[in-house]
Length: 243
Image (cartoon, rainbow, N blue to C red):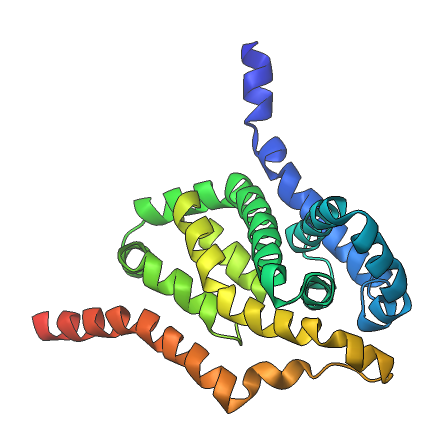
């Protein structure tokens, strides 16, 4: 029994889930880019609508599971999946389904990264001295603010926001809560774009994914990001004052 316990906690076994994620992500990048794009959604729209109309509950479960797998394995197609959520289920409850799926996938990759590397790296940072120690302490004292900030700012890649918290010792509960609520603004925007895909597809056009950078949408999101960053600024000012 002790041998099995030691084997299951060995570095190689602990890194196995993360290695599997990395391998699937690499293979998926080369094999699925043409399968999970807007053209594929346009080609299968009638089938998807028919299945939704005849098996709504199964479609919801299947959609959430597929979207979670895309996020969990960092596969191409997350944006198309978000649009599909709006296309199939309207802005609401489509946005809710999108957020649940994306959060589930994000938690899965977070756990793989933390189990494989994050716990050891965080422990080493805690045990270190000097600059590394100060950086780790700064992260620990501002986790909520930093987590919401990287979710709200549109320029932070989603997979980066999934991996970095796992490598600096962020608690799972804090990560899951900040992910769920932090991605809501962007999810609502893209889901609403997906909800209008019927007319776009009928006209043979492509959706405007740059809508999130329109001032009337981007400015409120940046306002939320500024609110998340405000405590960081206050702490920095107080820290300088103490010096």
